[in-house]
Length: 176
Image (cartoon, rainbow, N blue to C red):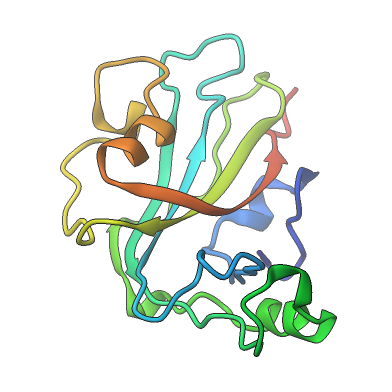
């Protein structure tokens, strides 16, 4: 995922660098993760809201896009051990096409409160096993529930979403 810089598995980014929706690339080495006709849901969550010690708003929902279509890795093999480096590299060159999906919750960049330390911002791409959701009536804190700690895991289970890719970065308020 890129915001004119690379976010990759836990590096730290500045809040002001992440206020617009990033370009996101998917990479699949499991042939079952990307099959013709599959649709996907992308979710961005902050499990540290408002802080790691106070979970009253956790998890905080920052973005949901459903019904995304992705291009599978084009390898002649169905054996994941036989994917070439070129196949894997090519998969990184294929961005998620947000225009193919339905944005249920508009992108909201990180906004961690002052003096709450690093927050994790986690992107999870899910394969949909049911028809795509077409609306989300909840609010962002706790994924629209009144249950502190309710988040992406429960939401995914309720809606038949299977995780196929994940990435995250850290960000914190400059006032620490």
